[in-house]
Figure 1 (cartoon, helix red, strand yellow):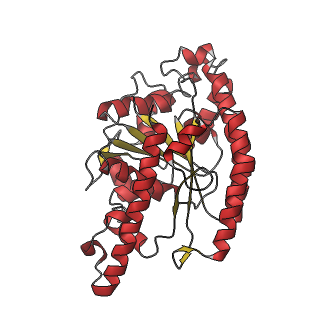
Figure 2 (cartoon, rainbow, N blue to C red):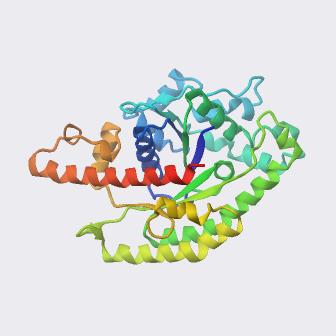
Figure 3 (tube, rainbow, N blue to C red):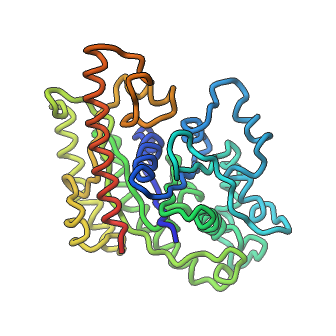
Amino acid sequence: MATVIAMFNNKGGVSKTTTTFNLGWMLAERGHKVVMVDADPQCNLTGMVLDLSTEGSLDRFYVDNPGRNLRDALEPAFASRPRAIQAVDCMPVEGRENLYLLPGHVGLAEDEVSLGIAQQLSETLQPLKNLPGSFRYLFDVTAAEYDADYVIVDLSPGLGAINQNLVATSDFFIMPASPDVFSLMAIESLSRVIPRWKKWATGAAALDALRTADYPFPEPDLKFLGTIVQRYRLRGGTATEGFQEYFSALDNAIDTILIPALKDADLLLPDAKYDEAGMEGSYRLASIPDFNSLIADSQRVRKPVFALSKADTGKQGFVWERQAESVEKFRAIFAGMAERIETLTSA
């Protein structure tokens, strides 16, 4: 069965989508089969993979590809259709074999209320019992169709019912962050929220109504893979002084606030596993500086920054030589992160 990883932080602007795309591509490049799920109603991951540059292109995609998005795939549960949820015919990612996208839908947020009610009252409202287990069921049957090793779920910022469900029913979660005061605040919030979600999922899995549903709610076994610190500037090969201060503050908050809370809730892997993975800093999977001008080229050609070629950037001479050095540095960063994730998720 595929390993499901949630990319989550309730703070926005920490590059969850970009990281999902680059990490998914790197894992596929390393020989894994990967399904990326766009669970953010803003559909930014969908836009990174598909050509949605013209006005109305996303709407046309929905019309031309019925059922090939997250919301439509869940319709048998949320609209009580007389048919079972089936594996999604995912979109192959151009240029990278064994990498697939389960596209998002802008209307997914409309299902937030229904799911929230179901997750609170599913023991007494039988028509709602199929909702809480439907997301993970869909991911599992879709992953099985593609013989996938990993399912990486890109989540929106926020603490609503959909994110609660998707995080709590995943096998692992990664917390992208930025070296700033808002990420520090988010760590304090998540140290309270994630254990609460785990407790909710444990209770939900014990409910007879959810255990016997068409889409049974899974027994939770969520574990923390680590953080990714990104979106900071370099000077002389290292983070500038202002960012370094926040790096230290983040490490301290993770060590003294987040990790004790996760440990108490049994959300951590054994210490030896993190040691084996050779983590950076405090439970850090990677430190990723700003992509600078490479991000525009990456988005334009719909390739990760570490796969950009000279032709992709259109640069020549010394300018390309400097960019080529950056491309290779980012390749090393994402390869190192992928290797750590392989180690942490192995049996």
